[in-house]
Length: 217
Image (cartoon, rainbow, N blue to C red; front, side, top):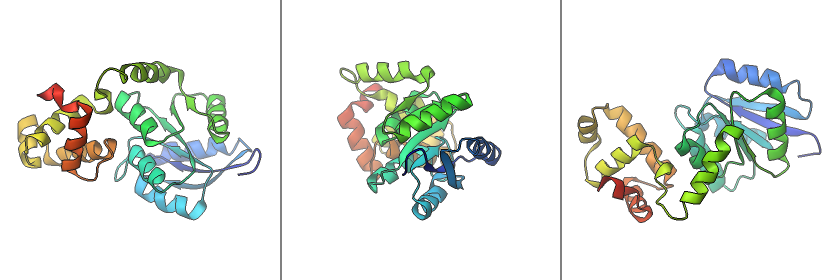
C-alpha cells in the first residue's frame, strides 16, 4: 500500500450493484479495483491472486457469506482492511462482522463522499461506522458486560440452536419450526460460523458457555 493509492477487491452477489460500485470507485483516483467476486468463496481466490489493501464486502451472500469470509481471512492472518457495505442493520450481522474482524460497517444508502471517507479511514488503520448503527454497537458493548450476548444470533437461530441442543435432526427441526430442511441447514451453518465453532456439537457447547441456551430452557 502506497500513500493515496489503495488496491481494492469488491465482493457483492448483485452484479448490477457491484458494477455500479466499481464505476463509482473509478472516479476516486486513490482507489484501484483489482478484482471482484459474487460470493465469499469466489472472493478467497481473487484475494489470493490480487493481494488487495482493502476488501469492500457485502454481508448476505450465497455459498459463503461476508461474515464467514471475514472469519476465514482473519484465521489465515490476512491483514487486508475490511469494510462491510450492506443494507443490513441487523444486530447479529453488525456485531458478527465486527467480532469476526471487520474494520468498518456502513450501509448501502451511504453517499459517495461518505463512502470515500469511510474507505480512507479504514485504509489508514481506523474504523468506520454508519451513523445509523453506532447506537447498536454502543448498546451491545454496554449490555455484553452483564448479559449473555444473545444478539449474536437471530431469534430464529436461537430457536434452531435450542433444537440442536435437544439432539433433533435437521428434518425434525424443520418439522418443529415449520421451515424447510434446507433453511434449517442454512441457519445451522450461520450458527456455527457466528460462534466460530467447527461443528454442531461445538456450537452447542460454546452457546452453553455463553448462556445463549438459557432463553430456550
